[in-house]
Length: 262
Image (tube, rainbow, N blue to C red; front, side, top):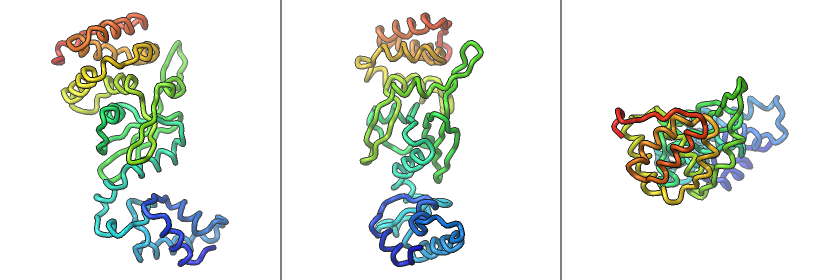
């Protein structure tokens, strides 16, 4: 088991890194002997007391630099949010994930602001993490067909791309999948949602890959395509006709959205 100052020396080499308690436990006690558990807790307490590490929330720490020591916990979460998000995503989902919905759309539009809710589609994780006033929501996507339930992660993984944010690689829905996913989410004010969808169709309509919409349309998003076709009707005739065709090919009903102010 390492002594205290050897632990501090190692931590000094890791400024700005994010640690879970188990990472510090492994650093302090590489042999992972359960009998040392109480000693590890005492060392963590001393590291916090002497400002070698800061606690961002229960069992989550950073090794602070001098600037960090002048910041409160809310400011620190904002500063380290992307690293925290990637740490949690890697811990719970490994590489089997993608950022979905509105944040994926915003990233494609070069908006890298911190979202109140970050939706992460995974192969097999359903969980909610709270970071101050923010939430990371892990979810699986299910599709029922002919009495059987299917996990859609394997189907949609092909419709993802990797973007670098603050020098960190994140996997997210490509612009077509993000558009369709966000068209069905209903947890914010309707007018805000329509405004963003309209903006993305206007700005990126000419580069959308129509075949991807056809592939996505085989699954559970007919209501999304109905919504998108109504928005596209006034913005892009090609997309309007494409969305109509996706609905038709997948046995969906054509539903107008006029009463919702499109």
